[in-house]
Length: 418
Image (cartoon, rainbow, N blue to C red; front, side):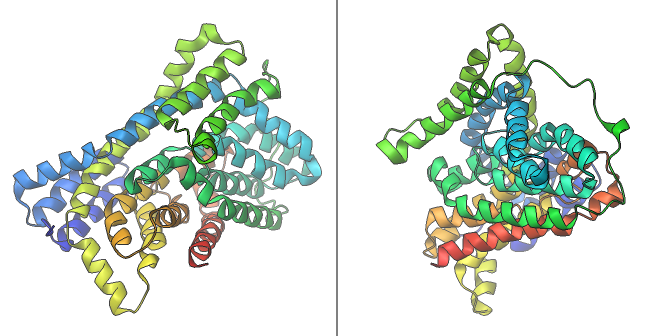
C-alpha cells in the first residue's frame, strides 16, 4: 500500500501536537489538531485526512473498551483500601532498614496488579513520606524509589499501555506482560541502587508537619486486598497454562468486582465503579486523539523513510522498536500515548523485517518508559505533587528515571538478541 501522506507532513503534525501539549493545551485536542494539520501538509487533502484520522481513532476502540472496563479494578483497589493495604504490608514485612527497597517493591506491585503508575505513586506516597521522616531518607530517594518501582511494574501490568501494544501487534496481553519480567526486575534493582545513592541527599528533608495524620481508616486484611488482583492473574494465566482464553475485557472488571465483594463493600459498588471510570476516562480520550495522529503517521512515508535511514546507517531493523518507543513517549510525555503511536506506526514495518511480534512489543513497551516523564506531561507534575516537591527539584530526578527505563530497555533488547 502506497503512502497517502508525506514524511514531512507526519513530522510537522507531530511537532505541532508536541508544542501545543507543552503549552498546556488539552493533549487529546493537540493530537487531533496535529493530525489534521499534518495530513493537510502531507498532501492528503481534507477528505482523505479526515477519513484517515477517523479510521485511526476507530482502530483504538478495542483497546479503549478494555481500558474502560479495567477502571473497575483500579477503582476497587483504591477505594476499598486494598492498594494501600498491599503497600503497607510490603513495607512492614521488609522493614525500615530496607525502606528504599520496600517503597520501590510496594509501588511496583501496586502498579503491576492494575493501578495506573501515577495513581500507584500517589497511593504509596503517604507511606513513603512517613518512612522518610522517621528514617531520615531524602525526598529525592523515596520519590525515585516510587517512580522506578512504578516503571518496573508498568511493563508487567494490564495497564492501558500494555493493552494498546498487545492490540497493535495482535499478541496475547499476558505474553506481553511476562516478556518484560526480567527487564522489570532489572529496572527494580537499578531503582533501589540509585535511590540508595540519593538517600542522604537532604536538600529537601521530609518533616513531621507534612505528614497526613488523619489518613488512617479501616483497611481490609491482606488476603481480602489481594483477592481481586490474584483472580485477575489466574484468569489471564489460564491461556498459557491451560489453553483457556479469558479476555482482559472480562478478567479485569471481574477482579475488581471480586475485590469489592470480598472486602464487604457491595453497598458501594456504584460509587467505586464510577470512581474507577473517572480514572480511566482521561486516558481513553487521550487514546482517541492518539489514534488520529497514529493513523496519519501510519499512512505516511515516515516508516519507510526511517527504515531506509537505518539501512543506510547499517543498523539492524529491530533497533526501530526500542528507539520508536523512547522517542514517541518522550514526545508525548506519556507511556501510553508514546507506546501506542510507536506500536501503531511501526508494527507492520517491524513484522515485515522479521522481528517477532512479541519481542517487538516488549522492546517498544520498555523503551516507552525511558523519557516518558518529561515536564510537558501530567506524570511529572502528579508525582512531584505527591511528595510536595517543586518543579526545579523534580527536574533533577529525570536523568535517574531515564537510567531506570534505559535498563529495562537494554535488557529487553538483550533478551531479543539471545
